[in-house]
Length: 316
Image (cartoon, rainbow, N blue to C red; front, side, top):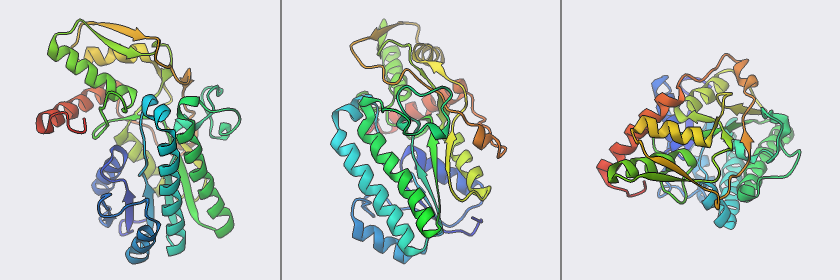
């Protein structure tokens, strides 16, 4: 990959895709190709094939996916399995057919086994059972990862997969039912402070531990991987540090300035007990994250309040 490469960022309006566009543009990559879902439906195989045939793409960053938190995954398993399978197979196969030599597929740390040894190494994938609340999403993502491996082995392509930890940052989904935990906590805490509420409700017991990576750090990690010339494999991307959900909620309250209490709703699922990535493979390339959790939450909260002021709670 070089500064003149034609790079297609699939899902450029999402949290991950928009961070990739910001990072690439800031580093001088000037042939960035994007399409909204209205311009290109990635569920339409013919449209995707024609798009790749026309655009002569050098690198694909496949950040488009159907994503959501525990509630969305557990209540929409058919949608998560079907849509993710179709998107990834359409894009990966069209990239191969058109001769696109390099591709990055975005998996997720949540596709590792539920009771994985910690920290989680890449080779632990498929060594035991999934977390049931996101089984459909995990199966779809593993299929995409394995499809990349298969095209490399059979056709000599240079398709790699990255496994980001829990992400947050600008353009996150702040929906209380379908969003991820950190975004939901930011919205709940903001509304509680605004309305003078005495407490906020936190799903689960608060004991599970999670690792959080700012999406701009993810983008810089992906670029470091591409610029390293690695041609295949699976790479974890994270901070190597985790935090209990209860402590995360307290940190969000502190950053936003909410002094009320936390009510843990134990009727809601906890999910995987702990999920901490071993990030040594990427560290060997000289990459480390630079955004602390506190500063990242503060900047994300500023993005959230700007979004609410500009659009109200539409898509928040």
